[in-house]
Length: 84
Image (cartoon, rainbow, N blue to C red):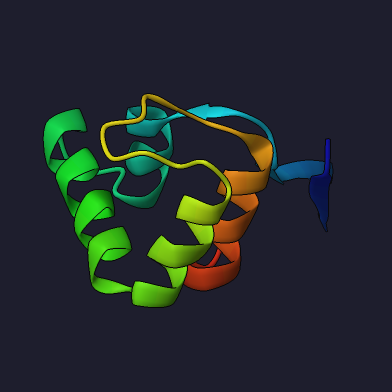
């Protein structure tokens, strides 16, 4: 499991942790000021509109309406759209 940390004046601070995420959980990290439903809809829209991202996720077994993303699937999302 990859974990990124950053330093601040108060010491090490945990960054984004690469692990399994619930779809809504990950969506809320990208859209923290949205409702879970709205965030989920927006993340699905990002995936649908990015052909290469969608194709890569499908190769990893991603299915529309999947509830849990594997660490590898999360890694691919982060590679395409950046860390939340």
